[in-house]
Amino acid sequence: MTATAHRPPPAGSAVPAPAPDPARRRRGPRPADVVLVAIAAFFCIPLAWVVLASFDAEASLAVAWPATPTLDNYAAVLDTETTFRPMWNSVVLCGGATLVTVVCAVLAAYPLSRYRSRASRPFLLTIVFATGLPITAIMIPVYALFVQVNLIDSMPAAVLFLATSALPYAIFLTTGFMDGVPVEIEEAAWVDGASMLRTLWEVVLPMMRPGVAVVAIFTLVQTWGNFFVPFMLLLSPDKLPAAVSLFTFSSQYGQVAYGQLAAFSILYSAPVVVLYLLLGRRLGSGFAAAGGLKG
Image 1 (tube, rainbow, N blue to C red):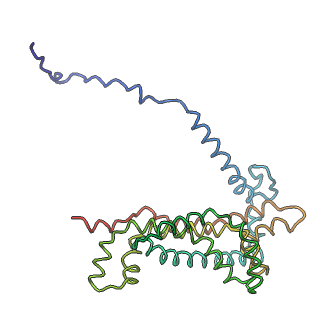
Image 2 (image 1 turned 90 degrees about the horizontal axis):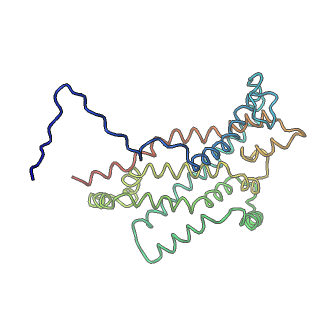
């Protein structure tokens, strides 16, 4: 048999385009896509109502474009009793709980990540079980305990309880992030004379900043939207956070002012969104410093 040589096309001749792949042809919308779009629309409808109603002086439960957009709803809620004091209480309550949770989670995750023992796996399983325990299931005995030890209506006690309730999942997340930090870098710091706490502070934590940011954001969002705990443990009106103030604001009138309620809801959600935008830049940075071991 004689092999046929492949000849290139002559100069100046048009090269035929490859035939389109039938598998890559554009397909119509699949049923799963339609279902996902419908679910997304259901989630967007309440958000659209909050935004539109905040600029509508005659807002109702219907999602409608305001006839005359106005800022009167924001002007009505921007005062000390309605917004500023509850927002400050939320910052103190949730910010303190987040700080305590992150510090305790880092200190608890370090031995779980670096020192293996027979009790590590049962302890982690216990933590996973504790994350699924609903907070409402233990609030009655917690309330009775707070009354007996005279800690009811105490802001520091509420901060500690919120931190305790958020700590199991924070430890679980922090342990996973800390496992991604190579132990060899810590060993090199130990050879240079660094102590364990200094190694944790100056070596491990800078390399897991994205993980710490994730834990902080998750804890703050969880505590910021917590209504039941401060509602049960805090009684004085001047100590109530914005989550509870939102409830009392919507029920203190015979007829609910939907426009003012929507404006307050946007102001209430703004700090968490701003924090996410500030810390979100670090979430994708990864553990770039770990590349120093290679080469």
